[in-house]
Image (cartoon, rainbow, N blue to C red; front, side):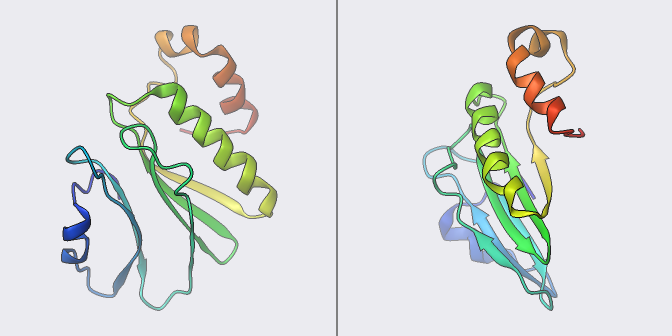
Length: 136
């Protein structure tokens, strides 16, 4: 889930029956935004530490591993830096695509990947997106 709008003090307030809060990112300076992953309480999972990639507004992310699947939830604010988002996404993919696991990325990127402005400004990033067969 992205844009949960919770603060660190409120993160324990959301209780979903039969689910656990596996990993959460809350903003520290601004309001709103954020990412969280809930997991069915009978599943075994491992949290991936993404603190080095997390950046308020630009790359608000959390990730877990369940079996052979890496699941990431990421939010980029419309005011966030697109270049930072794409750079951190690339770092994530470079690091975890070598783990021989499927990667599922969910969230709200607030980027029109097929829009003329994105294609014109981000030719280099387009190659990265298409070469990895990312489906939007």
